[in-house]
Image (cartoon, rainbow, N blue to C red; front, side, top):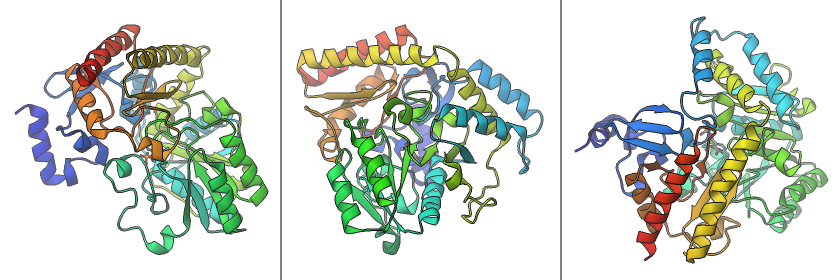
Length: 427
Ligand code: PMP
């Protein structure tokens, strides 16, 4: 037995399912997970010494790749001055200023420790601000594991067939209404049925937790208009898309301004940091400026702020996104052409450096279409790629991420491996 599998046996004794977050367990792809020893640039190395080109990137944060020298150096220097104070530090202002400069709709931010905290806090704030209780979310969108969001949720909840988790009180679940992604009519109907009761619509502007599904033309603007007409707040959950598809997030790419934005992943540069932010008038309701309570012992932690700030600085440099997006779009369009020319029953969705190959023919525009994918076939593809040294997310319903560290050679090798694995699957 290899060392990863040995460790997995041991881990299962002490950690539920052997992991600290479900999809990591590789359960839906019928393999033992790899235990990772180290990462550098585009590559990770497991405890058995095997090297992989990594397209998980810690599930999105590592837009610069692993152990970026400037991030590591800055982190080291900040660490020497102490790891946590629970008191204000200048770094917190610097990162807040940077976020406000980068994200068009954000005038003030509150730093938190995870995307889950960001979305939970954002809906509490929306409820406090509007004095209403109901929220609308979209089928297959994932907003972390807060009680209000584990209703028809994506990501691990979808992978394990538990989009509605036990343990969520029915009284709370009934406050979450669900609409269809890319289906404005379904949102309009909810606003009609629940007049003056809806505090907020929360959406992943590019759905990234049921595979990758871009918004249809006019969908995001339509949500903006419906929220404005009905006195509800529009929340973009940009935990995945923020600082990823564009320096200013999906809201900059599609030019639609939400009232509140949740951010995570890239914002922490690989350390635990996330944030929610938006219009000053709304954010000033957050404690201690206002009455909506939200707090955190480690919020604004200096190490997380340092890794995040350095990462945001690097991605703000001239040409960063042009270069990354060009490379990613080249890769995905090569893959798309290949799949199309071979007539394989597959469908590729991508937006700049995030993409997903669905194991089903025809377009994927919503949850229904995404869940028609053949997850068994995906599992075989995943295993084939892993055996060729390509580390993809171990679920059909997750995105693959291209980072600035992926070289042309990495991408060529990945295309080559992909062709071999797909040909074996379909021929
Ligand atoms: N929102 C979105 C859009 C996400 O993709 C995720 C995590 N994948 C979350 C929220 C939750 O973030 P975290 O895992 O940091 O709690």
